Length: 267
Image (cartoon, rainbow, N blue to C red):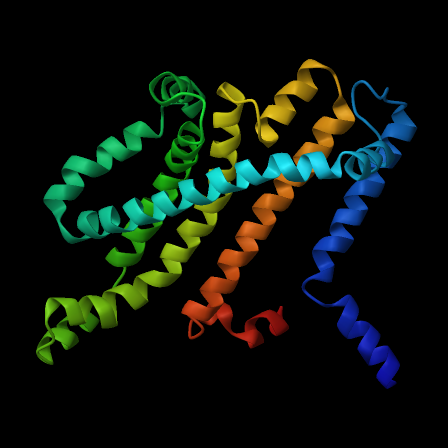
């Protein structure tokens, strides 16, 4: 095998290129489906029309994407700030778990689209209702994953730390928290994607700006290329935020098995 062939194989097998290839296949199948079944543009727009709309309406979509991104980030940060401490209390006390955990599960059965109008009534049409909607959707995955992480610490490790006369803070810092970090980051990754949805839900209910507003306006005016272009921008927001969180995870827990390069190379 020549060096040029080896370099080409490395590029083809690059992790960042595989999703792009798969996305390209989806776009090709999308276009072929429209052509074969002769689907009219008012039902599903062609990829070409969506790309043209992205190019023409790009500045407007980026401008509207900013408040959605801000609401998503603030809602996610609130989810982490409240979810992790509550998970620590639930995992550390059976009494707190018996009181709080069932209520958290019960709260997830309430549609957030039904609560979002209340936020508009209480807090107006500003940024706060969108942040709260993002917080509600992103909160539960953080709590569940963090509780699972803190509860999965081996009792032998805890006994070993106590036998070495470590205090509660040292046990938490050197045993409980490092062991729970992979689960916490797993919950945070789910939370950041749901926070995007929550921000859009808040914009659907009451807003005159943001990607949610663009989607609602496009649906009402049957501007399907604009709607699909807005969905592409919304997906990019989620992907970028997820990628940033993944980078933070690699820096925070480089020792975990999921971050080792040989795991990915073996796949």
